[in-house]
Length: 256
Image 1 (spheres, rainbow, N blue to C red):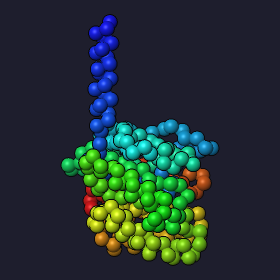
Image 2: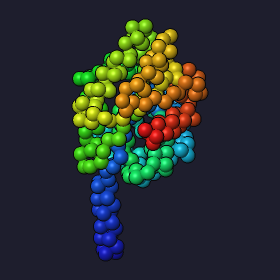
Image 3: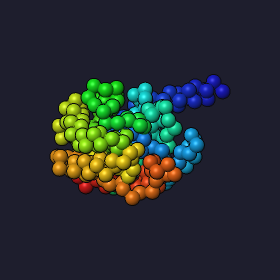
Image 4: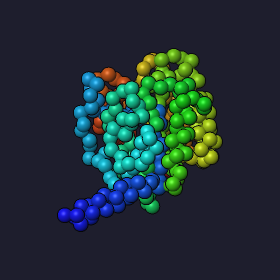
């Protein structure tokens, strides 16, 4: 019995050591607001717990927790980041699974959740809490190796409420991309954004126009969520739409 207990204890130590040594090789930053954080399957302040097959966990897909440790990724990816809201399925897992399946030379994928619902682009400006958190988490993600391959950005719904916010969105986003690249010391870091499917105000098309025009900036790509089914609130994507966005982001990355 003593030998059996000793063997079990040793096996637990080895398993813990293996888990502790996990680190990502190909790292992607998930940033923006609620549709990136994930609201698929959320209704009446509860998540239904349904995970589409495109979002199933994979031992080779990790996520950086709020405590800056790597663990096997699974939805909801932003549960410990977007803490004041209920999170569900977002685009991250569908993206990661597609990149793993179709990408050449892709190793262990690391997802770094940073999105927070209801945030405007002003709240992401350099020096803000959200900006500093993204830089800190991104820097920590490569501490034990690996490389940041892209920032995935889905934000702008909160900037559709006023004409001034919408008309100044493009300049602020261009500055934000420049600042991210500068502070991460990655001047050519790919930035893949999502053009809005919805908004909180009447200037959705103004923000969308700015987003679609960002393709002119080097190493910036845009996928378009317009027309994807929305939930009853007409603001957040359905689970199926979140999956579709993830697949579009993966396609954009793999063909960049």
